[in-house]
Amino acid sequence: MKKIYILLIVLSVLLVACSKPLGPAAEIGNLVTVEYTATLADGSLFDQSKDYDEPVTFTIGNQEVLAGLEKTVIGMHQGEQKKVLLSPEAAYGLSDPQKIELIPLDNFPSGSHLRVGMSLPAKDRATGEEVQGRVINVSNEGILVDFNHPMAGESLWMDVTVKEIVKKKSSGIKNK
Image (cartoon, rainbow, N blue to C red):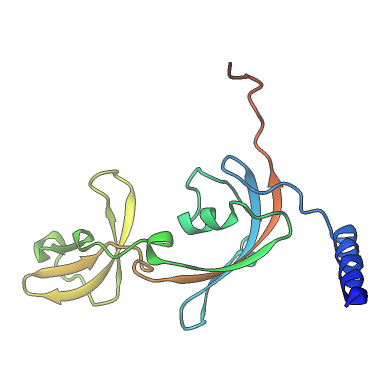
């Protein structure tokens, strides 16, 4: 029994001595670079960082990426990998019935070939930004268009690796 106890102590010391230091953990305000693969519930590929020309880099807390991705990297260290399931709220949000609109037929030029599934550009009334809607029904009453993000209501599996963390700079002002 004594030999096993000593062996465990020696192995523990070796493990600590040989382990690579993790470095600082990512926190709000840090600039982080990540690699990721995002898949749908059925396992099909949705998005991956290697498809972009530049590394995926963002400042934690600036809402530049999905909320769930920001939350995932907080506390991670450079080189660390994590696989998480993002709820719809943490990914592209829930489907909002307020973003489904019936647009009268007379708003479209005569001869328009509108069909279910096609994409329609429009301007957001609140921001003036261009948004894309998807036709979900065509009837005599008008065109029913869904302006929710196509991934609204979907969960995403994300496999994330933190490649680099640049710590935020302190202002140098001390609180008294």
